[in-house]
Length: 403
Image (cartoon, rainbow, N blue to C red; front, side, top):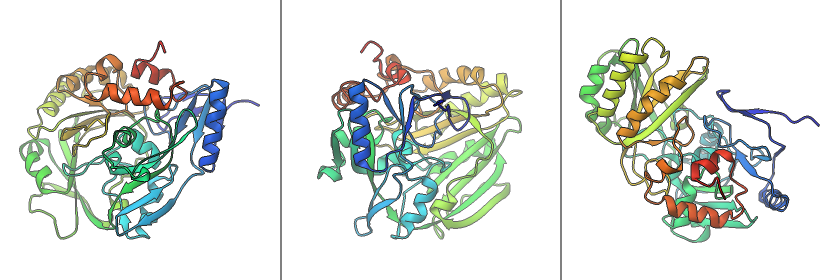
């Protein structure tokens, strides 16, 4: 039987696994992991394939969890829900609403599965709002030896337990998640307003914007020097500070409908997480470089967001309030020279790369950015002693080429 190739969302990554497995429950996951270990083959989970890095690539067994979807149970009094890993973010909001619950925040799009979004540290924007991974307080995973291992509240442990903090952002290398437990909020509506203004106004008022709105981000358009400022607040809690210019969008609705944006055009992306600096010195340097060198070739925009600090071992926002700068380029246009030229700027400002987006860093550089890097690697090796969850890219990323 001919094997089928798999592509990521943007089309920049393609590979051909030996087998695509679609387990229907935890027992199925245990069986396929044990079988792969006996045969000495690798196993990689795939979410929606939205990542721009080859995290899912494998010549062996690719595991889709799309048959393991839905809310298992919810406790509105505790504000918690147990969710199956293949649940799409685009469906999860409506399911949680039935229990009077909602996720604290969502990313710019909702194409991902919950396990994929957690595994890569997917985030939205807001200086008091953590990434999606920070809301995972427990769950269950199947380790590289085929053992079922509960963690966090599912194991009766505190969410600050080392295993729980490692599992929050793990790139699918500790095991295959079979359920996740999230800390949630009451179901709520949000008021979105998108404004077109000049970038100079944003630079002058950014500190006020991020401290007065529940969530705010902005796109800078290099060719026009305009910016689209996007604010999200609970209705009735909107601050007085609003950008001058044209109001492009003004809607109120459930948070899961209002936060994500439609992205019909595909793109490549590099995003770095930097220590929060509301004077935007890093962005100012990016803007200067783009205008001097890349303005004629850049057909898309630059996105700036914020994230609250968290405790996950290899989270890009670990132990520091964070701002993010993302470079976006239409997938049909060249992006390598553009990204390669700007990456040193991000590194100069102590940036950490988004795990699911383009970057060039490997173990020697990454271990300097994460205080608990060695602890995470030791725990990963303990749970997956044969390295069946590693592919070539992850071995290089973690410095395991010779193991």
